[in-house]
Length: 216
Image (cartoon, rainbow, N blue to C red; front, side, top):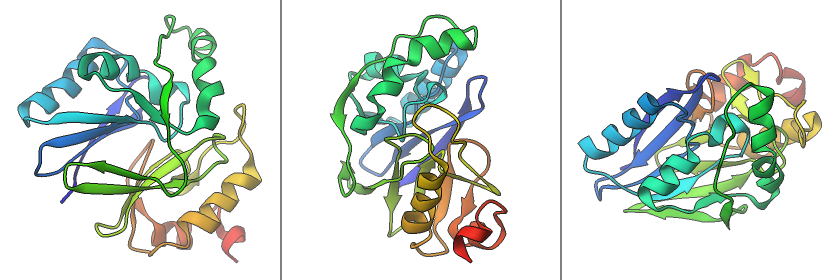
């Protein structure tokens, strides 16, 4: 069984996730820790629960989701895994940091590309990769059908959707990703988003004001 631990990190209130099972192996998704105390919080949870990080994953590579990648990669010796279409966002990271008056940002390049249909294996567990562009050109989500959850990044939020005004974003593409990928799944699927509280596919189908026209 996969256990999910969430952290809210950095000035963007980004959700970082650790997923682990009874084997002790874990994956870290969207590492956003940007201060010493946040890095320490992440590392303490891993140490206290006797976990062994084996994969560093990104749903996408906007600055708020990669601030902790260097720390995680260096501390645990993990290469970064993300979609190939996120290379530009990685390359722009330092200029984005300057826009927000942040220090120069060093972040690892993508070492392994994730694609639609890939299976992420750790311990006794598996996650399916779904390609869901629109918020970012290489956005993916991680889906576990048996436990009925998605680590969804910035595609779908409770009562909202991801923004599409950043480089590589496209509103129509995002709506198609939600409609054709996420809304075809069981309504009981829990969505763990990149910001804000958890939600479900069924709730967003019924109440999300940005999506009523898309599903009518």
